[in-house]
Image (cartoon, rainbow, N blue to C red; front, top):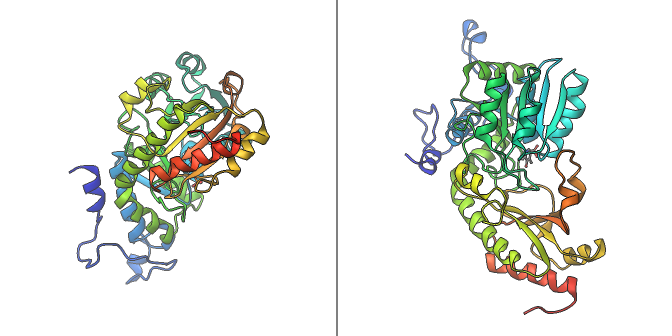
Length: 386
Ligand SMILES: *Cc1c(COP(=O)(O)O)cnc(C)c1O
C-alpha cells in the first residue's frame, strides 16, 4: 500500500472499535482491574498516552519508515530531547547553522550548561563538516532544507562520515513532513518533526515526534521522555492524527500553489532572487532532486526594495498574506526574516542583495495569491505594473 492509503487505514491495535477515529480520552487516571495489573499495565497512567497517542505514533512510523516513535508536546521539545538522548557531558554536538533558531539556542545555551559543547557548520560545506568531525563529536543535528534559506545538505554523505567517526545523526524533517524525504533510509539515526506545521495543518495545535529504527535509541528515548515527564495531550494528538489523513493531499496543493507563486516572483522585476529548492535556479536543485520527491508551500525570495520603509510599504499592501511565524496551516503567511539570520559559518547576509522574505503558500486559490502579491508590489512602487 502507498503512504496515503496506509495513513487513512491506520488503526493501530483497535479490534472492536465501531468508529473510524479513536476516542479522545482525557485521562490522568486509568482504572485498573486488580492489584497485579496495577503495577504491570501499559499504559498504567494517562501521561504515557492512550489510544489517540498510540495511533499517532503508528502514523508517524508510517510517514518516516520507522519502527519506533515517541511524542513530545511540540517540535522544539522533540529537537531538544532527540539531541539530549545522544549526548553526555564532555561531548560535542555539531549543528547546521540553518536550523530552527530555538533549537540552536537550546544547544548553545542549555546544553552548554550541561557540559556539552556545540559547534556550527555551514549546511552545504561537506569539507567543513568533515574537518569538524572528530572523536569528541557525539551527534550531528541538521535540518534540510533550512526553513529560511533552504540550503540542502548532502544527507547521505553526512551520515556516512558520521558513521565512520562514531557520531549519530538527527534530522529535523518538518519541511518534508515525512512525505518528501526519508532521512532514516538515507542513514540518519533519529528523525524529528514539528507536527505543529504540516501534520496538524490547521494552525490550531502543537505536537512533536521523534522516530528511529534503532531499538537501543528507542529505549533511550522512552527513558528520557519518562524521566523528564514529556507527553503530548490527547487533544493535540487527535489534531495531529486527523492531520495525517489529509497530509499528502494538502501537501500537493501547497506544492502546486507555491510553485506558481515562486515562478511568478522569479519573473518579477522587483525580486532579486527566489529561493525554492524545486526551481532549477536553486544551487542545490540536483541534490534536492536526488533525495526529495516533492516540495511544499514554503520558500523565500529577496525583495529588491530600497529601504526598510519600502519593505514596510510592500507588507502594508498585502491583504491575503498575513504576518505570522509558523507555517504548514491552511493560511498564507509571510515574514521578513533578515533579523533571524544570525549565523556564523555561512555568509548569507553579506552575499545577498535585498530583503529576505519567507512565504508560506496556503490553500487559497493561487490566482488570488498572485493578485495579492501584485497589489503589494504596486503599493510599494506606487505604480501599476501590467
Ligand atoms: C516550528 C518548527 C519547530 C518547532 O516546532 P514547535 O511545535 O513550534 O515547537 C522545529 N523545527 C522546525 C523546522 C520548525 O519549523
